[in-house]
Length: 170
Image (tube, rainbow, N blue to C red):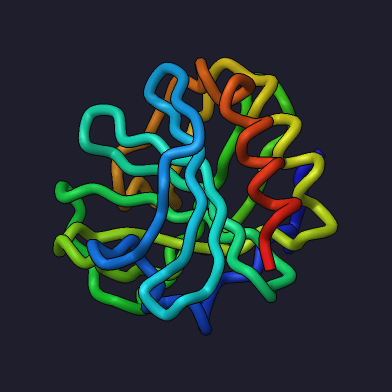
């Protein structure tokens, strides 16, 4: 089953990126994955899970007051202009393919990134596949970037800290 339209790109969130002055704390670590929580530079509450194996960042974030989860990914190896739309697919093990359109931006360190949103109504399915799978494969339309294959070992272990953070998020 292909989930068409499952993701909305993050037009209003294009400038949100991890910042040095954000006040986030590590809540749990397992493998290359970390659950974190705290506030953004603008004072908005945030909870997330992220990893950066081999210089490739992948993060799932929930910002207070927003009805979507934001997925961000990026690497210093990419060259892309802000605002560029990039169709992509994600697949957790042999689960159905998720289709998305990422919007390009740059993190504060200058690395290029893509981000898109997952509707809150779909997050249970996305989170279950994320924490119960062993591998995530990301493919970019027209081979704009090389495919990513990320190990998900540790996502189940950090999930309880992430869920606890979400329950406290205001």
